[in-house]
Image (cartoon, rainbow, N blue to C red; front, side, top):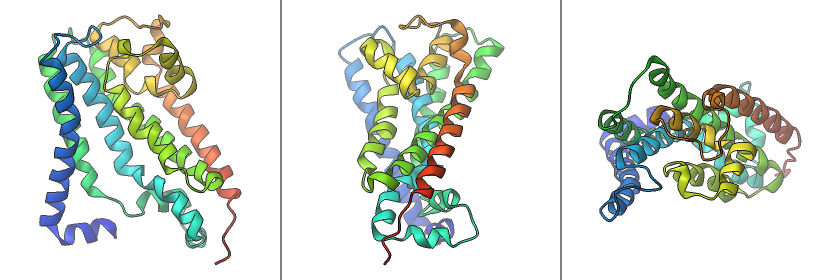
Length: 254
């Protein structure tokens, strides 16, 4: 329904996609401005930072396109409209994902893929089959990890009622952090996003293998290939927490 309503006014849709595209381009423009004053950032060149930017933004763009509506759960809990979702013969999670489905978010994904394509052509990498395979695996696993964070944030709002900004700090804040090299952050933060909220598996750890860079935490080499397993674990945890949050939902009675 939301797709049909969006496509009714196609010029408006195209303008919104372009607006989303230009807005996200400004993120990389800030990085470009930095590189007018420096040659490397944390030891990473501009194409390497663009690779991190493209992989992080593309993974987040997929998750945001499919599950970006979960930050509105708090509003639905407060006004009691979760009740309408519970009486329909469709899983609530699917209904929330489809609620106000915004195709304009494709602008972020398109910009990220263009940036990733430029980075891949600009990098001087020995593209072995393993490294080639790791790039799409990184995007799919990263999207699943970000999607899990969206669902966990939505589930948390069943108890917190109004915590959309907390969710955004992990989703939008997380993808911004992953656009920069891990070497510019403190080791305590790197351990936090590796062992607590495993955002490092979105792109940092597999990207270090693709780029031939050393891991700042000196983890075993097999960790660079663990993103699919971590994504599966995140999805399982998110599903359990979402189920618990939904069962603990208390209607407003309105």
